[in-house]
Amino acid sequence: MRKILLTALTLMTALAAMADSFKTSGDGTTWTMTRLAQTEGTGVTCDGVTFTMASDVEIAEGDAFAIESGITVMMGGGVRLTVSGQADFRATERVLFTAADELEQPYGIFMDNTERVTFQNIDFEYAGLRNFSSAGADITGCSFTRHNGISGTSALSMGTDGTSFTITECTFTECAKSAIGGAANYRNPVTITGCTFTANGTANTNTPQINLTTAENIIIKDCRIYGAPEHTMVGGIVVSNLVGLTGTLNTIIEDCEIRNNRFGVATYCEQTATIKNNVIVSNKYEVNAMNGGSGINIYDPYMTQTTTVTGNYIEDNLWGITVIGGRSVNIGKTEDPTADDYNPGLNVFLNNGNGGITYDLYNNSSNTVYAQGNYWKSVASQTQENIESVVFHKNDDPKLGEVIFMPALDEEPTSIGCIPSITTGCVRTEVYTLDGMRLGSIAEARRGTICVVKTTDGRHTTVRKVAVK
Image (spheres, rainbow, N blue to C red):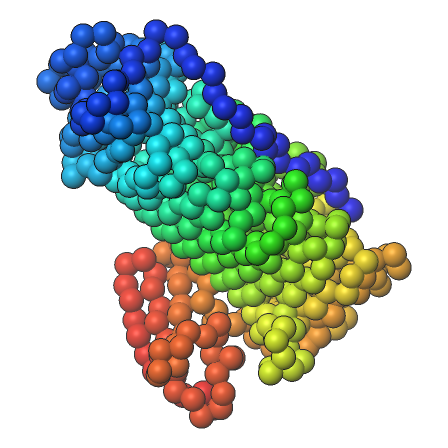
């Protein structure tokens, strides 16, 4: 059905030392930009709260670096600040690392230290952050704008193998390649929450906005990933396993809004993936439908991936969900509510297709795929005959596996996911039992249960109790 172009992830190698650099002595000194400007031979000058770096600076192991709040650091072409010692990048007022002028392409910051670092209120413009710390980092309230690609294939590049990261309430805008990425052979557990990604991939190469390798835990939650239609090579989210990593490999993509990319979400090869309660709309900006355009693409020719898809709103993609391989793909399995693989479904499909044909679900594998308990909004009524017209599987090609999609929902669910609204853009509904347990929808509650339903449209929140009959 479609040809897969796997994202190019390179294996990370050590960077060669650069000439004309200043390295501190490692004698226990705490360095600031002010101290560097006051020290001969550093290449750092100062004008008020604006500092200019004309050449590389390395804070040696044994020394420390502390960011000063409210400053601007202007960096020359290829210039980088390397921190091999301790570091504190927690700014109380915003700090900007940017290019010395529009023609310069600075490297940015390279972390090679041994203690975990927090970056807070740091803005990277043109420059990037590459972290090879063996202790990882917490990045909160930072922004990455127009990264030039000099420091790597991502504005925020992660390493080394096994090092964990948290990225919270950050923005990534118009970066040349990926916003966040890691090496194909490095397992970096990462939690990304509350972040916004807008029109990254301006170089229009085969790099998605979020480009991750599987790890013990990959969590992408409550994020907004907005593409640009002209970036026809740039997808939304990829979590891949291209080098045969094994072990505990968990991926969760939940409560995100993913729009206007080449494709929405792609999970490649061995991992246990949960794709839940996302809005995945208009990810169709691929010039050839055979090469992309899926709302969700599950790709695993080695039959090692276990994937659960539930509560998603999937509209106006070239393909709704495409399945190519996988050990187990569960898009809804409602036959036995007590079973370990029970999945209420609750996905909504609407007008996903290309070439004048609707493809809400395309099973391009030999496996049986369960897709029960969903609402097929593309068709007039939820009958087997109608739904059959928007599902491609064994009935269309005997070499393919079957999709078991009945029973379907009789009406559109009120799910946790964010559903588009003409007036507000996005309405989020959350359903809880009185003891605080979160449900996928009212349909999950037992008869006689009283549920609390909270609805938010971005400006107003309403809470009401509902008795399930």
